Length: 384
Image (cartoon, rainbow, N blue to C red; front, side):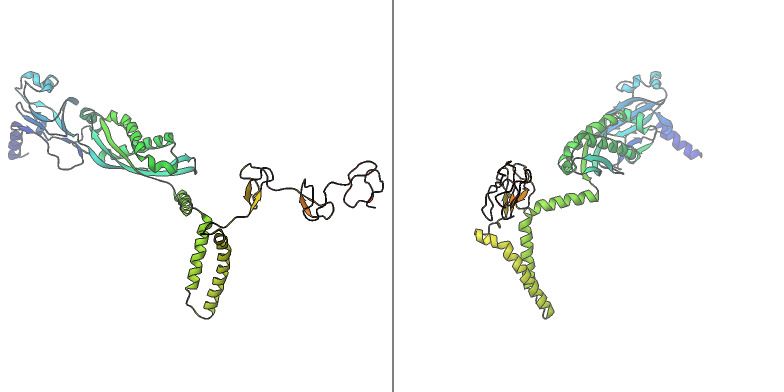
């Protein structure tokens, strides 16, 4: 060291009058004030601004924490005097101490997100994978604890130095919370605020031991895999279409209009006219019922009564929509003309014949239609 440097160093040691920190970074959490040789003279001024705290560390231990205000380092009004051993000598010599300024403001717009998808059992889609991201605000709630647990002896500690650790803790708590809440994937968007509050409380349980507090926590988006999103989109599209039958009729009308506007000649014109006639016939069938109903009502649908309760059901239905009974009816041939009749019919709907089977005059056994002899006793029947 040159003589000039030595003189400057000694002068700095002798004339430190103000200890303060003006933060112009925006992301600094802890700043160690550069005291030459860590020697602080009696009579020095300590200025702590709003959203700051000054932490004195003496012989490796946190001696005291100063809140915003102006302090004079002397024997009368400074709480640390009872904690720092050097002060008991009546300030005849400087004492050695490190001064750390801690930024206690809120650090906003800090980002978080899931690096890997979270597995979740969903009521609608089964097992799905979710990804999520958002933002949070953070502040140092206990400067002394933060110095001891996190910052240590770092001369300059920023949010970037702790952001990775915080993100891992947040993702762990988010996975825990979303598993416990059991919110269906379709309802997640309506629960972002509730999830954020729940997760903030869980995170602060962990961060409190570091002297930190999460003041705000936002869930901005929870997304599902592409195939699940496609299924959700299809379900939404079907809901938007509403009446599928009316939608198909509308599509047919559009196709007919496009065919009529075709100005091509020759074969193209013939094909266009053919398509137009074909679609015209379809439209007649589709809209004929509405015209008969008057005023654009829906076309009548063919129905079949339920054999059990009589409720009308769509033709071709296998079970009744009202009672759940089976719509298919066993059929038997008419005893006289052979026409198919429902089982249990008393008269034929074709020839009107009674469906009570003839009986043998001798043994009363039932006889098949047109039988000439009894299958039980062999007696000759009236039909012989």
